[in-house]
Amino acid sequence: MHRTTALLAASAIAAPAAADILTFQAFDHPAGNVDNQDYGLRLDGFDSGAVTTFSMENADGSSAVTVTINTDIGNGEASLTIEGTVVGNSANGGNDLGSFSLLMEYVGQWDAVNELFVSTSSDSASGTLTGLATTAGSPVGDGESVSIGARANGNGDTLFFGRPVPDSRLSGLDQANLFEAQGWVMSDLSKGTQDFLFVAIPTVNPPAPGAAALVGLGGLVAARRRRA
Image 1 (cartoon, rainbow, N blue to C red):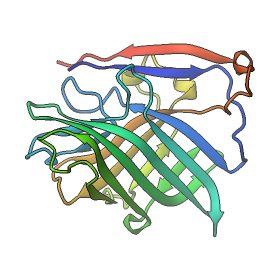
Image 2 (image 1 turned 120 degrees about the vertical axis):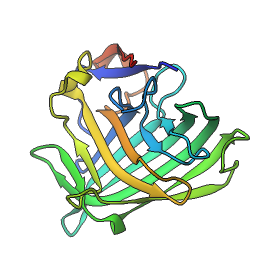
Image 3 (image 1 turned 30 degrees about the vertical axis):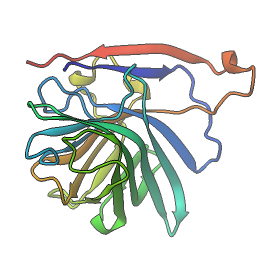
């Protein structure tokens, strides 16, 4: 089913609460290689062998997943955490799987000049997908979890999170404020294509009570993507 990705385009980026903590709202990527299904996480085979995608958005197109980067956890390393609620769907005729709690944690390096987080060790990442309100078609029931691990691409990288290369598939979005994630994962219940693919925007500081009008946020930018 075609989805609309609603991205909150911030016209001004406030400083994070702490200098070494960066937070982002994650959204489904509009250029995933699945017909008529934008997604943020793909775990083929999770749903009885079907192509299975997980959306990072609420029904109204708002983000349901947060990305947090701690740029300095010691020893020159940084951490990146992906956390929130995802909804499982099979894009090619399988079951709607219901909602799941997603938690994935990486250790890597943060390049402040190029605004890029890179993880290069599968041993430095781990996560879980836990059922919240699942359907009968889900192999994971409510309260049950499956582990998610990282795997490396041909260059030994497990996750990139940073500014996207200019891409016509992202036209219509505020690329000046956009970040993009691509990661390679695996779980015991999935096989074939297994990856993170999502876009994100920085989260500004929460406004003080009564000061919401002073934050300087732009409106919603809706980008429709239709694939044959």
